[in-house]
Length: 358
Image (cartoon, rainbow, N blue to C red; front, top):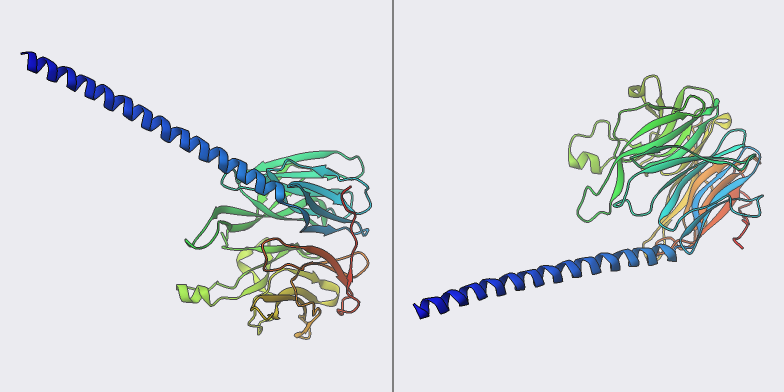
């Protein structure tokens, strides 16, 4: 009996030891998990705080003002070139993803999202009144809004592109917004409207017709793609989408050009489209993006820039010039954006000096 009693005591002690060991192990794992989470948050914050300089987010108003976004120690500053101080400064964790002047130049809409979309995909749409200095959050969406543009026919209506999901469709690809559609918001009626149900993989460079009830976007020409090979061989084109019948969308860029088209601006009075496309490669094989012009009356295409860097995001200014961004560090880890302008025929390229943060 004594032996059985001793064995029973050992079993109890062994069980207690195992329980204590398990508690210690789980506590240690929890401690390590907490430590790594905190280190990750600190690292993300440090990375966010390193963000600095001019971005490619900008707009040009009808009266010639230029709004743009600059980061300093990771903090987004929204500036207008005729103002001495930033209109808005935001916390280091969030970013300004797009801005748009109203047609009369009195309002400036902008979108704010988390830099880390794993934390939140919510977007706040703000409108800043340039006359009163008031900043208002007009609505929040639980999805990413990537682009904004006011309707030139109705200053109360703001169109935007909204993504349905943020994901990576390939294990080797980074997470990006997908399943895009065209929406609008009426500022006076405080009403949101969804105009399309396309769920496009990609949709960019939103513009609104000044004459018709339609919008222009850049997206894949994959209407008849059925297989993976078909999708891979599709090209990116510029489409006009009639809002009363989105299924009747049509391609307005060159029907014979094989190269992909990216950012663009429509110039209806001259029947021109100024757009970004690959113009060549450098000695390291890095693409060089230039601006081109296509006239849909004559079907003629011509190259406007030969900067051999990365020209993007063209916009038509009040002075009848084409404004665009140039990344002089394209292909490197950190971009170096500079704002330029050219005449419509591509002559007289000029860098635009913007106010620096004090």
